[in-house]
Length: 224
Image (tube, rainbow, N blue to C red; front, side):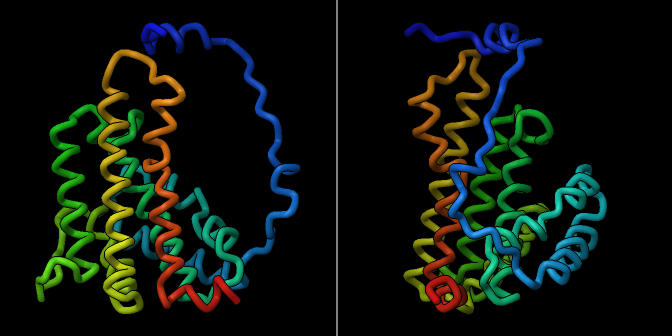
């Protein structure tokens, strides 16, 4: 099949009505509990965002997104510290990816700068996980990258070296597929479904989030 120009597809969809069916039946047996620490988590997420990103252009939108509820619904049975680390990781992944987003990201159209961003992020994550043989913990001038510090420090203290290495490999896979996604998005043609599926397995960052479940911090609660 010949490549289809992206803008032709967008133009053909203008003024069209798309119906997305509800997913409630598909997830009828999925646990629907909310972690009892929801209120505390909401307060901590709001404090973290306002204290670490006071001038972020999307601060109000981030606060309105209720990441506290997001985390509490995703991890209904874990203890509070486990819940906070997992929620902050998800929030960090969202914010990190937003920098490369085609609509709002400052690096969306600059592939070379985006590559530097990925490289700096990976080096910072490796350092904070204690996997770069350095005795000094790095501090990044990029506030989004630097906000991984709390997450990395928590995983460094609670995970074995092998577990941290697995987590790092998943972050690296996430970065590599992010590069592929940006290359394709900056092109003129629409990506076909099979090609999209290959890199979406990484850009969704699901494997990064799942990698923390192997750590001692989560093992007891998630398997009880």
